[in-house]
Length: 532
Figure 1 (spheres, rainbow, N blue to C red):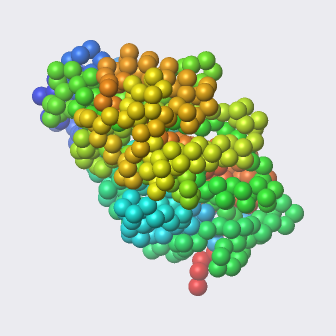
Figure 2: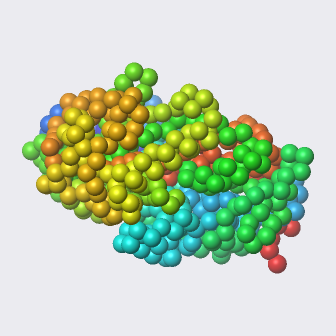
Figure 3: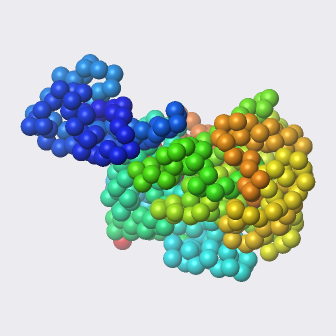
């Protein structure tokens, strides 16, 4: 397969014109092409007149003919097919491997283990998708929080109630495997070629459920409402995992609890694991009119049907810290992401259509291990302290404190709702958000927001609203693992995904889950691990 990049066309152009341009650039006749399609589509709006930028995939009719283009031009490359095969090992495994957590890391780890014949047992502290969705909707309406069924916990993990973004900074061939799997289970076809692919929380729920059903069809067993409560360890070697329903013998555990499993981290620390603090970020959600964001990005072309919903990514260094936007949700809403009683948390999500009136994104400032003396427990305590302050500032009932951007810059604590109506479902209360954070962090955020205005006109517009606090950008904990991915503290435990500090987002977590599972499968034989 040839990939022909950097095909720039006006907004009026479509796939047919893009393929024709690719043929012209390569000098190939149409008769020499067996199949063609769009591999990637993005928008270049840097110079005030947006263009579509295509990467076209060409499958040549003559087998092996792609090699003649190996050094043809910088804009032409050969795409090798994804060939991810795992050879099972020979070491005896007396019991099925256990996967803790059914977020992206645990889901893909369990899927690979099931496909390799290991019949994994999956422990998920929250409920299946349908019940989880009901619990989230009930919380949004009534403020009655289920600490094990919410935005953070349940089938699919925290990423389920998000934008379903698949963008990632990692460059790993397994990203293509993840995308292929998602497509096989019903994800929208455009995730295969969009520059910033997203599924949308409405579409993602069905995709996750479909993958889980494949795991079960292959002999895997998913235990919902079943938290991991302890480990049985002998001489530094895992012997079993403990749950409220009893102990499960286990010699191989994929530990993928997600970034909010604070009680699990505490249990692991008490069991002898070293909990190392890692960097994360805190701040709030910024909401603007989506139409004004697109006007700033696309100028006079804003609203053209060929353009994708406008997205931004901004950053500004303030001394040793970085203020940046994170998890931008075009046409989305701010969500109530609490998972602990009396602590308020914000996050953001979009449906696949991204057709909401507002855009929202986290605006956060970095903190790191040095802020907590390397102690992960202190980092978790800091998150909890901020969430408790946010709950009290909101006035209870999981309402959230909020103010206009201009008010935050001046430290006034005022909220005037005009064009931008806050979407946070539990309601908002006017409050001085800067007073909830340490002064150094508040000062950095004010500097960063002022810098963002210079990058994206209207970012600090009077109608823009900040809702807080956002504290769960990533895990504050890292569990050390060796070059094979196994824990350096307990043999037989594979820390995996975002919770133990090895991923950030759906794609990277899924890839880490696959790597982890492939190492387990490559060591052990599934003989004898099947259920009767």
